Length: 243
Image (spheres, rainbow, N blue to C red):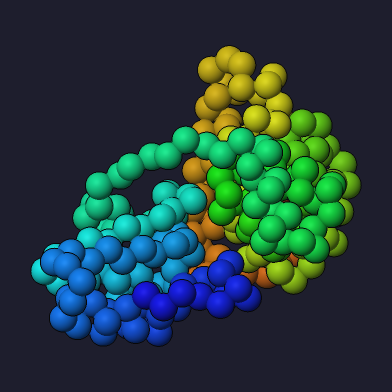
């Protein structure tokens, strides 16, 4: 695949890029009998690109090996994962991620980098996406709802103002807030607390998958997201997940 320009490194991989790769993969090998194709980030491919790549994975050219780098493997379709061997790498240290952000996102100040590092859980792709979409304020509001609940809907109101009409930009942030180390420890203790986290995570996963398909009302969508986060703290709101 042709190397992306610097401005394209953090954008979704398009079907046109995959098709260029496929055309080149059918050319005759001249420097050996093996070819490696690296797709990074594989978890940020557009739907049409995924479908195109699947054909190559099902019938790869002779001597060709595909290396798919995924910062969030759960985002890959099961049909892609089932055709790959999984090799997990160690998480990057905060210092390594900070150096990466300063190199690739020089416009990010120290506070934004710090928030991205805290949310990344050692994943460089998550950190880059966090900075690119400027999710620091959204992240802090979500963590506050998780820690404090939102009995008077005030935090959900702030979340709605911050998110505005860009709820899809928050798609990547939804599930991180429920599994990160900054999640409220008291919610993780006890069977009921664990069940609330699991149920909210499942509902958020389903909601994030539906965002690109359905034309949700932005305001109602934000309230739904806030309600799911608040349900981790409040058994009363947790009951609404099943309603």
